[in-house]
Amino acid sequence: MGIWSRLGTVIKSYLDDDINVFRSEGRHSSADPDLDAAFEELDGFLNGRKEKPAGNDGAFSAGAHERSKLPPEELRPCFTELGVPFGASAEECKAAYKKLLKIHHPDRHGKHEGNFKKATEKSARINAAWDRIEKWRVN
Image 1: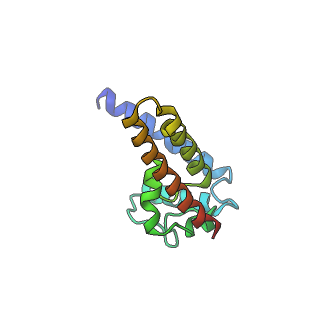
Image 2: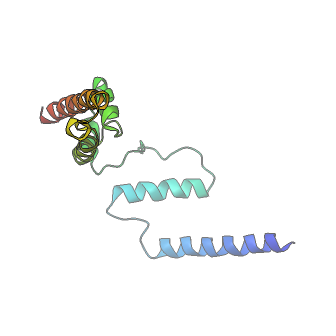
């Protein structure tokens, strides 16, 4: 047996011991269903099971209400215009909106007519995207 094989065996025994100690401390079963589902999936992975446990759709239960209210698909270009992922939180959208408007505000590009025109168009698109997302959030 080579040194790498022995090292692998030692590391695996330490990891197995740590997992067993963790389970014996009673942390495996908790009041958190997401943690329980994660441990069940980890157990399945460690035992060679490929499929996910029954009843686990891969989504966490915390904040499920927010995720269930995804924006309509026609707002995807608005999120793209702001440079945030589709369905980003209000805080992320607002931060991106302010950052982009600070960069592309026409007043910052007033000395050059071509840049002024581009900045005006870009800021109009940013404002329109922000308005559409905000109208959707309010409703």
